[in-house]
Length: 174
Image 1: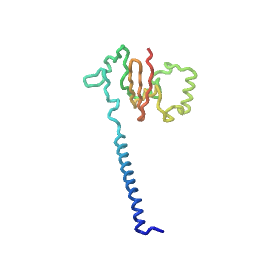
Image 2 (image 1 turned 90 degrees about the horizontal axis):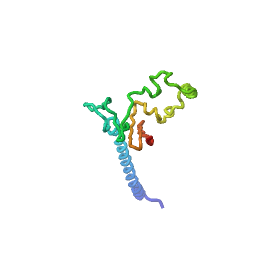
Image 3 (image 1 turned 30 degrees about the horizontal axis):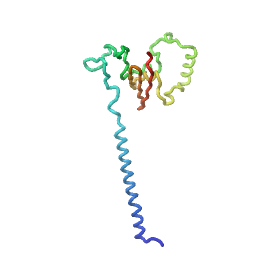
């Protein structure tokens, strides 16, 4: 026995009402998620570069006094804590930039390896594979700051590059 037109409309209405409610909830959830992602995608205002490091001698205009005494830890050792960023990229590709070739002696195997890498257009370079720079190159990149946190027993170096933060820790060598 087939349902008549009135029964079919009632069946379809019963099916359609929860479906409309489901789609309404889906659209509201999607809109809320989109709004949340939009609101949280802006860079945070607490970036390292403009954060003054405590204990650094300053000039009257608030800039670090580079001619002032270096900060020391409680045990008298140099305190490297703070935010560091090179002025330029002079040493990014060549740590010996500005030195004469005779001032940078290389062992035969190292010179051969360097020439091989130059000949192969640096395909072994981590940057050619979209990998992080690595140490010491990451310390020479003038585009991205890094932060050093120094305690009596631990030194932590935080690197920020392409919205990634990576840390490297070493035990203090006393």
